[in-house]
Image 1: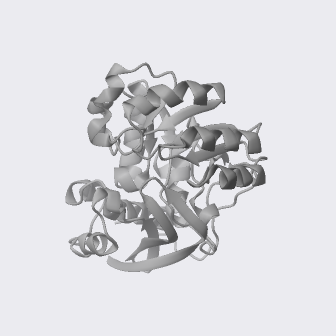
Image 2: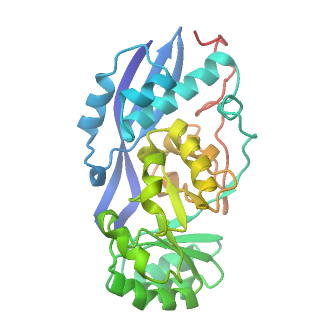
Length: 333
């Protein structure tokens, strides 16, 4: 077994802004694991919010002792971007060696297209109105917000896209006082949910307010170990493979979260289709799918995911997760 690690840079189609800052490119780490001449691939997005850098993630992967399996990996690396890329590469490798698609190996039903949100980044109300109008035919818009001026932003978006479903993401940028002020207005404008209104370390405030606008945990929810601290605060959890540390934990988190009464959202960092492909499996029948990362890029990987005006489609074998005609089918030893 041999591991190859690469840093890939994808320019964005336009500047992408959230409450914590702006970016013009997506910097990702790609992992390829070769076994008996067959290669499995995975991708992760190191995220500064979680004290990750490209260098730290690559160092974590380089330090792994080979060979490694998906089972042993769970204890060798913590939940996070590094484990995600390796875990997804191991799933892809197993699919190619076994001749079975990942969904079958995982005991899932065959995946089907999912309606995905399309994200509008934080901007002036005027610019957000123009972007909303441009994307008014999309069924679900996700709006990045940041605090002051958010009511005007959402009013502008609703004017530009009167028929679209709307969810919003505050990226930890609100206060309890702002939630109580803004929530009734957003509900009246047809907003269905807000992601992570308060900082993860200060979300106990959610225990003491009436959540008339449902709340989804993002930065507060990483893996199954996060769930006990969410009780009574959140209505939904956002599962991202870069937080869970891969598809293995993401599927386990989804199962446990559903048992605990949470609705499921499946989201992403800004990355290529290689990062989104495993998440499509997790997103099956989710309340909200938000896997639009490749739509924000100027150019995606070859054989990228297919998108239409509403849906993201399951990956083709050439991208990830299934044997293709050029692979030699062998049992994983």
